[in-house]
Length: 212
Image (cartoon, rainbow, N blue to C red; front, side, top):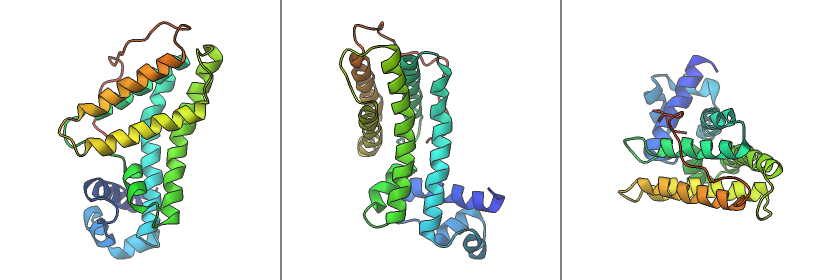
């Protein structure tokens, strides 16, 4: 991505996280990025256009963090590593954890078909990633109860996105971690009796200073 275009996208991300998509205007993006409106319209046709680019950039950034879960050999360990990553993100100091894709979808899904589809594409990437791990886990560890990996992945993503949304209204950010612990218990329950219970170990996954 050209440097000026990247500055604009990164500026849009910062402003959307702080204000939301609707309250983020083109003038504000240009000021935050330190570029002219002429430069903006050289790369983007509209605010909606940079919104789509912002969702794609955020999704790539997030998946670069989540993909570390694949370092584990066993797919169930990969799932627990994924939960470790999400809990570490939620435990960072400062403002509650937020997701540009979730925020934009919440605001714009009914108003902008382009942003709705772009948001769905990014949600789909996460679901395909986690669903693939769950599918592998079913093959390696015959489950206690049958389940659809894609449906479980959508449920987990809904819990993840919903927890970030609700945590904004509460003084206790630890709610996200507690919800993720319930999700761990649920996933383990799908395989109960076939594999030993796993304990949380985040020593190999220190908190990151960035938020997907």
